[in-house]
Length: 218
Image 1 (cartoon, rainbow, N blue to C red):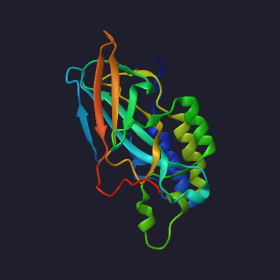
Image 2: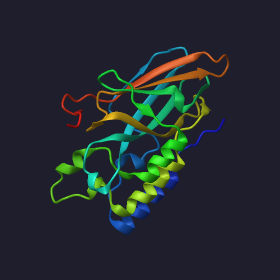
Image 3: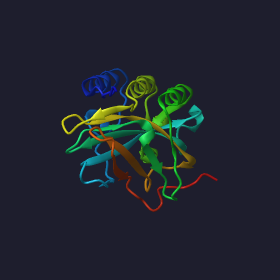
């Protein structure tokens, strides 16, 4: 089993180069080694100490013309940690549950890479549309898109094991099935397995719910 860890030093260096050369503003989470989401983690198995946190960082849009539109494709950064027992997990162990109770789709590595190749990266937080003085399409400088896409592709969540001293981080590409403004009100459920006896350990993370945040496209 192998874990693809996010190279935080490399990410910060990438951000510094891009901002110096293009004047772009990168998402604030890139300056940190772990996501700092405002949702709620609910450990379901106290014996394992499993916790999950997640942060939507990008939308994937099928055309540059849709850069400022809601999407059904999101890239989320996921962090899995345990306070006690060593655990293993695969992308198939993650489930995205939408506010209406339906399940979204979490793509495997091959499909995620293909989607990243065929789509355009845009900021997941549409609040940039409210900024005075205009904004870059999709909330990202055009020169930043390719390096950020490559960073996501190189750090997709994969099968691996994690311990109390070494959590697991990575990106996941998800399809909500319907066009949403955000993932507010949805939850990410994880079923990991204890290395010592293969018993399941469950935990969930709920994205902050805003009453008017989610809307299905006409």
